[in-house]
Image (cartoon, rainbow, N blue to C red; front, side, top):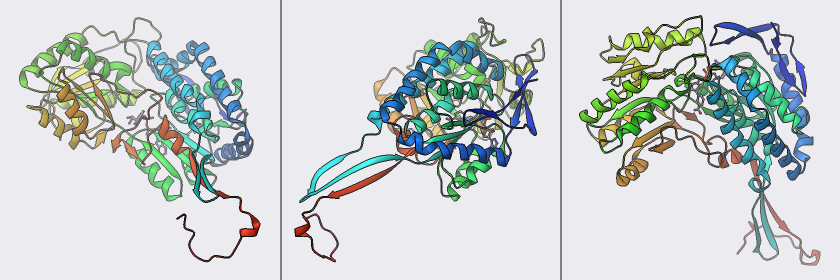
Amino acid sequence: MSLIRHHVAGKETGAGERTGQVWNPATGEVVGEVAYASVAETEAAIAAAKAALPGWRATGLVRRADVFFRLRHLLVERQDELAAIITREHGKVLSDAKGEISRGIENVEFAAGLVHHLKGEHSEQVARGVDVHSTRQPVGVVGCITPFNFPVMVPLWMAASAIACGNTVVLKPSEKDPSASLFLAALFEEAGLPAGVLNVVHGDKVAVDTILDSPDVRAVSFVGSTPVARAIYERGTANGKRVQALGGAKNHMIVMPDADLDAAADAAVSAAYGSAGERCMAISVLVPVGEETADALVAKVAERMATLRIGDGTDPSSEMGPLITREHRDRVASYVTGAAAEGATVVVDGAAQEFEGDGFFVGTSLVDHVTPGMKVYDDEIFGPVLSVTRASSYDEAVALVNANAFANGTAIFTRDGGTARAFEMDIEVGMVGVNVPLPVPIGAYSFGGWKSSLFGDSHIYGPESIHFYTRSKVVTTRWPDASESQIDLGFPSNH
Ligand code: NAD
């Protein structure tokens, strides 16, 4: 069994005194053993990032941008290999793995525009002989902690912009699917990134806490579940760091009576069961408005579910793969088996579906008459379970969404522009789709939820990431004639 080790200052490191197992979720077999970094190993990665900082910071912007142009090319060229790595350790189907790579490439493309993004402002003659300009400078070493569900895209959400801004990075990817980060680090270096600018340490809370407690780490980006996001935000900010911590989700899709119900059913099935529901933007609650809409929509969704092909992600005919671990599969199934006792109606019971082999598969489920207060509604399940919470009016549907603790994404399906516009104004959620079930913003915009879906005030990637990964400095300049110099204890006025 090969040991998956860390990548520090361009070299493989790590004794692997503590390790964890990496599984192929489709077969239920252990495919690797990953080293868990100790405090000393994590500190060594931080030290490598710190050592690489002056050189990278001093590298000309155009040369920095070159790395991202080359990286984009390499990611496209090697996407089949990278997708195979994702599927082997995560389980998602290969086409979905390529989709994630393509969304990650958007962040590389954005980073390649760094010469533009890092421009400051200049005001001439704010007072006689006085000019002012602003500049954005790197924060320093950045810690990036990422979840299992997007082992390529989420590291690129962070590392691309952080590095573009002149910072150096210690990435701690999910221990469940660690290999993709190593492949990414190798591609970055092949693209010309100096060793030490992007370091990868594997592991658990030990590595994460070392990053959070190190005075040499100036900013932390985190994506994962809400309880961990909250804890990371609190510990990181208490230690004086800048932290953005993106958490979990419970995304509602409202379907108005005037919507095209076939298109809405297609969208609901795609967004609920794609990647086995293990997406932070997955639709997990369908909110039809009116009983007639609800009855028709539930029937149409159930009909489509019967056609879904669940299987090994490497099989091109599979549309949905397994869940990440056996424990997670069992936990997801328990929500479906418990839903009837909570008073909901299980329309399609995916928990009862049987699969050959030892993979961590579960069928797709549809649960109707779900209401707040039921566990199936309140918890983020993160699996292929779609709840239906019926609303009698637009106002009731909006109030339901706005009362939820999570506020990552949401969508409305309607043919009425006025309703869509009102929704955009009324809804208290960070990312909104109008007839778009997964409104993940393109790389030129930033991504982030509200409320318990994000701790901190910066969204991730795009323009807000330039702000997050830099500190602004404002310089006021005067070139006086020495003969006019005099002492003046008054507060400097520009008037
Ligand atoms: P997780 O919170 O279990 O783990 C995320 C990262 O934190 C991993 O690197 C993990 O090793 C580390 N970690 C776990 N427990 C920790 C602890 N106690 N202390 C310090 N570090 C710890 O999340 P996950 O299961 O890998 O990913 C799924 C979750 O991520 C879901 O809740 C999903 O909604 C969320 N997610 C959110 C977004 C978003 O953009 N808001 C995107 C993707 C995933």
